[in-house]
Length: 128
Image (cartoon, rainbow, N blue to C red):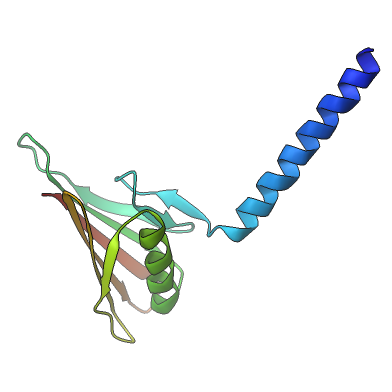
């Protein structure tokens, strides 16, 4: 009886692991930014952030740097922001990214630039 339950549980566990690994391969690797519905591509790290000191805190600024082309970062945000329910206006050029995103009671502007070494993502959010 113990062996039968053990085999059954092992099979279920293996099935769950295989299904979760399939899902992970389809999703773009990401980290959560300061806002729960805005993510940051893996490999980018926080370099600065600013939140107003007055209450209520209705706006936020975060800056991240990492190694990914501007085009790939734009594509990442076009997919991820749409996936989390944002409406997006892409005002980007070939060398700089500007995405204006809106949701009910919330706005976000994402600037994407590149210097000689790294790509920078600046995220401004404001609750309406």
